[in-house]
Image: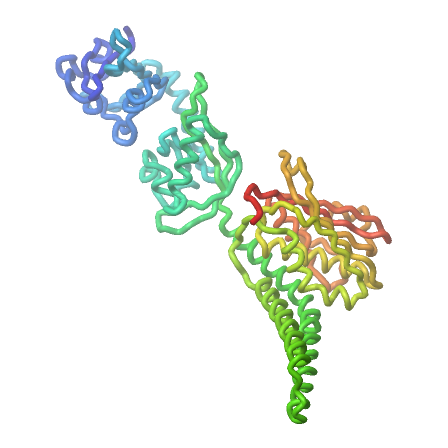
Length: 483
């Protein structure tokens, strides 16, 4: 045969070496028998990841992989190798047979292959995103320059290492390994797009937006994943700052309203306090009437405490936490902060809540921010007063993006001035505003749209000038039972 052939036993000791193998390597058969394969071929692949171990374990051949080996004289020789399990008469794997061809004898093919490889490597290195390939065992087989720069490693510090042990934070490591194993076994589909945290060499955590695909050979066998990732850490930080900034704008609008809301119960309490002082001086305190008056004071103080606590909760900056929540409770928390403003503007509030709603997957504070933003816009759209109706209901098989899911729907309907048709498409565009100069920078509805998108929900708007506007929000139903 023109190609070199060698066989090894289960301990990787060479048991056969043909004449072409002698010519390619420069070793004679008697020099290599019973010696380890890696001692003779001396490939870098032997140090990082030996495919022979995989073949012995799975019984599946490995086709056409190119490596550089060293011949007896110490010169590097490019070879193309196919390795298959060697079986006994009763089909037991007893070793491996390797077929390898000297690519220097096919200089045109090797030159073209090398040229294409260099070109591909150049494309990978100038890409502005991380590109990483991981085999079915979680071992990194390829990474580009951007990936090394983000992670802080040299290429030889990553290639051949386990991705999960090296680059995944310890608290998420086992869970991601389990998911990867299921994907490689075909038990779970690879998620094409997602965000997660990786850990750099210095221990810093970075947020990466990944786009992934599984690698499948000609026999339909999954042998790894290829991923491109964008470092969005700074963008995420900017988004959080924008959310907090917009929250502060809403907070400023709420401040005057909350002052009135708190002043009313405090004024009532002050009246009762003066009444008690007067009765005490006159020694006319009656037990039954006193108890009722104290209960009223307690109720008003409790109301004041809830308003202030809710305002402080809304104002503070917190980490996002999506969990099962009762949407009716979130709406009530938002209304607590804006109710006095609704009353001051002569607006009639109508609540149509479905009390048997399933819980939704939501960040309580973020959705509260969404609702306050939309309600404040509705109030501003009714300068002469009007009606504000908030309705909750179940919306099954709702199309969100490319999927159908069960959702809870929240409709916020006003009888305000409405929105011109030409502005409806621009409504969620950053910095678009129809408000007077100094009344807003146009980030409110853009932020709202972003928050709902992060919740894998959707928001729609219908409006007619001089009739009113309805915002409809759809949030994914939680599978957890409502407590």
